Amino acid sequence: MERGMQDAFRGCLVGGAAGDALGYTVEFMKLKEIQKKYGPEGIRELESQTGRAVISDDTQMTLFTGAGLLEGKRRGAELNSPQWQAALWELMKEWYDTQVFSRKVKKRYSWLWKVKALHARRAPGLTCLSALSGEDGPGTLEEPVNNSKGCGGVMRVAPVGLFYSPERYTRAEILKAGVLCAAQTHGHVLGFLPAAVLALIVNGAVYEPEKGLEKIIREAVDETADFAVELFPENVQVPKFKGLMEKAMVLSKTEENPEKALKELGEGWTGDEALAVAVYCALRFREDFHKAMTAAVNHDGDSDSTGAVAGNILGAYLGYEKISSSFSMENLEMREVVLKMADELYQGSRES
Image (cartoon, rainbow, N blue to C red; front, top):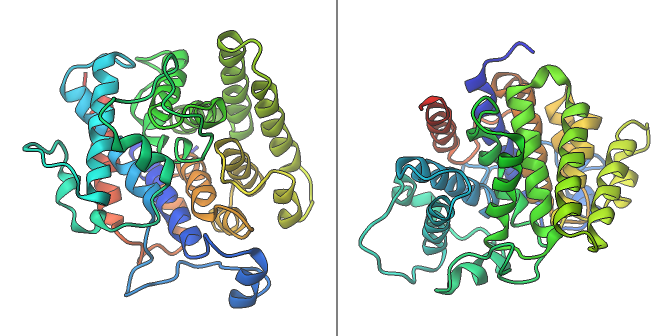
């Protein structure tokens, strides 16, 4: 595929932000309401509010996840180690502080803290706020913080797939990193397994695009399901999750109307449904970012999260230049901030 590595990093994060902003405008609207306001095809372009198409907590948390990975590297923490998890958690707490202004700490770890626009509240998820509000530390697989399967785990994890090159890290390590990242705030298997799949999809799309998107997704689903069966052999949610992902892949090959297909996959409020909707849209319209984003947000459910995850996947696969040529992003809020984080992750991923 003709696109550079840095272009893929940029495409992933900006694509996610664009899908997020497109969907955030209609997040709490039913499809009939969306169509009544925007026409039968629904919302198709970024809608400016005070001159900017605003992003939601999805992009905010994605940026702070990226900052957490960079902080972990600065500390010399090994991937998935307690030190690595602590760095991620500290930056998640930093995002939390932008929303509730509760902690008084002397040190901030990322330049993101100084970005005034990131202190805006954009319908932050209650699960994330609750998990981050305590002093007990992050949730783990051994000690889940709750039993939430909300999509707040998967929607922020794309930087994990970007940052860890398969030349230096095994796919099992990258998969586990996705799990641990989401499990800090979401304790249900359907809250953290989708994050593992997304991390592997993004990793494959960035580093091995020649495989093709369908194979990349298939491998990510199969590897995560195998991991989960070994860890949770009697958990009935694991085959359910794999079945939903397989349904998304099958539906993407049909000519069925996206509106009807998405109803078979759910509304995206849970991690598994958000990923299934995103995978369907990314595969169905894998060469057309605009169509993929339009399909990903025009439904009854969690439009900003499904748009964000679909944007992460297809943006990583196609690259920034290609997606920005088919979808106008000039008025996307904090586009330069997102690009800066993408560039920092790219540079950090190349340093030994």
